[in-house]
Image 1 (cartoon, rainbow, N blue to C red):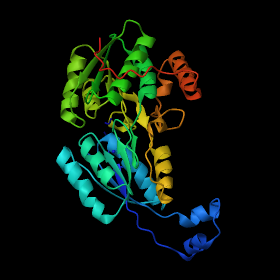
Image 2 (tube, one colour; image 1 turned 90 degrees about the vertical axis):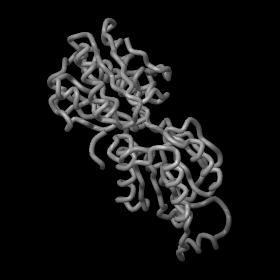
Image 3 (cartoon, rainbow, N blue to C red; image 1 turned 120 degrees about the vertical axis):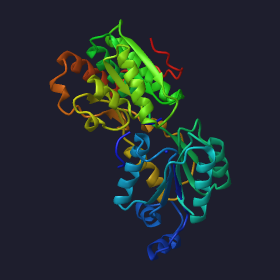
Image 4 (spheres, rainbow, N blue to C red; image 1 turned 180 degrees about the horizontal axis):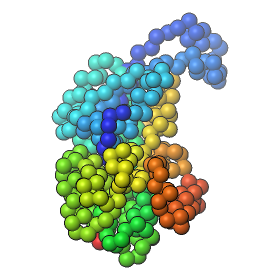
Length: 346
């Protein structure tokens, strides 16, 4: 689901239409297929409201927030948000209160209150609900999305399995939910592909955002022999930095947190998805879609974070393997097993 860095998962779009002379001209035109000019005349700047279960600083939130801010800066939406809405009641109350402003689109995180959000969507079929981490879409107006970092996590696993000297790699994760499980299992698969003898230790901190707990988990893994840490949760990089071991960030580029430790990491880019849903909202299109496939290497929704010079320090043969597998995944010549079972580690 998510991880950390500086501020840079669901929104509401009110259906307020201002009819310009151009729009009136379109309505007066003969019926028939819509022209590009007609669609442009009907388009509007939608109102989007986002609701985040955890503080905005959590990387999962930050990716969405950054994408929406970019849409607003481009003049495509009017955007506002509320964060730190952990728990069913705070999330449901915040979304309910926003309905009075008639938003066009609501973007929210279903980590808490999935059923309550579904009820609100059903009661407001004219509003486009775009909900993260929800298990399935709901007709007629609730679309679902999430980060999907399995592909770049697999590539990081290859690096981890190649770089470890102790033969032990650690992973600090949030909660054992399907999207997190798929990511961690892909990382483990990559590590095992790089070295059949590598051991991967997995620790769930049972929280989406608890940096001190994540740091403590990383330190415990390092004490147990891990010399590479995949920081799926914010805070684990701090533990790697304290002990001077390699680290991989998650969701956003976290190199700046520990340049001497952070090599790269799976990053989520929501821009392709944001462009898509904003365009639909600007045209008043309200329907339910599964938007998960936007978060892939091939569509630009996922990637490896920049190496920031680490490519000159890594074994050339490992980098070449990484590049080959990256190309194969993007071209559809290679597919990963989608394993959503709770990872046990070695």
